Length: 76
Image (tube, rainbow, N blue to C red; front, side):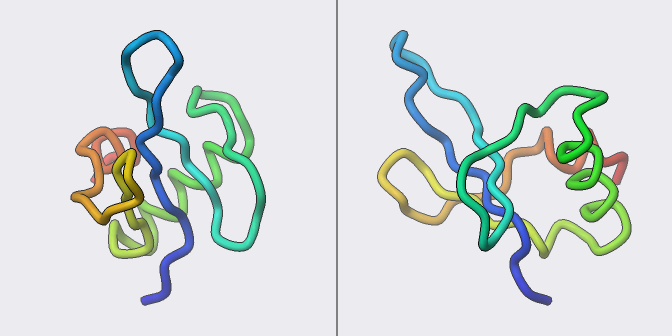
């Protein structure tokens, strides 16, 4: 299955990090909050197509495990 989304862990500017979800082929991330149409589309895709459509990268751009919140939020 092709990767459709990437979760990038990025510095938040306050000494911590946040997870930015970016759809493959698009620029910029979208808010990961309930009610946001792009986020809801992401969760539906993960629920129907599986976690294999998601890749994850750390702050250095290295591959890492997809954060557990993704499958929890999608209900899988």
